[in-house]
Length: 185
Length: 178
Image (cartoon, rainbow over all chains, first blue to last red; front, top):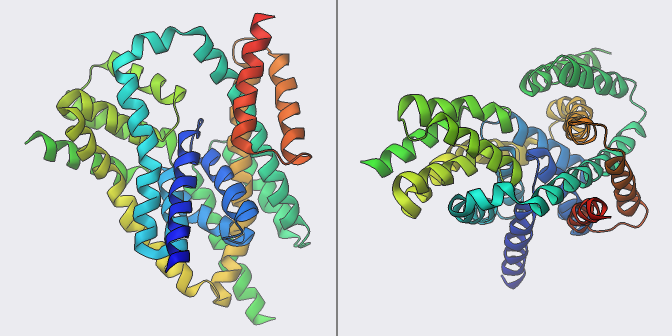
């Protein structure tokens, strides 16, 4: 009981901390969650994390909120969802409330815009390092289809702006075909 | 009743915004400008720039911003709860089935093909952020240097990612003043 309580407290504060610093959209929080819950706490395995990200990505709603729900559910069921969602919405709620009062001052502040510009480079670096670790982990499995899927998904999403939902659905189809072929042979 | 209206509007935003981030924008616009006239177009533009400058998903930021403007803190609460409720139900149900059936062979082989795609999608988001940062108005070589330093701190020295992000902001500010 005590360990569960400890876990929940830890879940609350780490989600709160991550949410307060998720500049630049849902994928950033996903990268940070991976560092925290997979690498640091070892609560979730790396493969499992990727599956959870896929769920968060393909369901409706903000990825950050969905990411918090999957991690929360995995840790402690419904109570976990409640705690992690609460922790995820508190920081933007408080920050937006304050900013909506001081918006003009905030918008024109030089230091604020310089900090935010620099943080974009930092965010890019966090994503790059997470993708490098996870990507090289997958490529070590020596599945010939993986590089094809990676290149295909990149071209589809980045160059042709194809909706991520469609990319995910196509990969599910490939997986289904692949598993049927596996049964036959 | 205004609280119920805010709740229901953002319930729709939460339930139908697939793909995260900017995919939610047209839906929010439809609800707060076209359907309810809660914001003017210029207020909506301000809302988007605030969202870009602050942490948190655009949908949650909008719910809080619109809610406060229309009906104070209780309004913001109703809108925000409406916004996250569909996610809680839908993602909760999917997670339940995932945890229960993930060891099934068929599901495993489907998930296997999904994993490389997910890594790539995360990487693509990173590439977009970096190209905007590096080539925004002019080519900013100092941001490339900051980025490279951050990668080294993260991979070689295993620094905390949030610390690295803040450090990147500080380095950029210092660079401007020297």
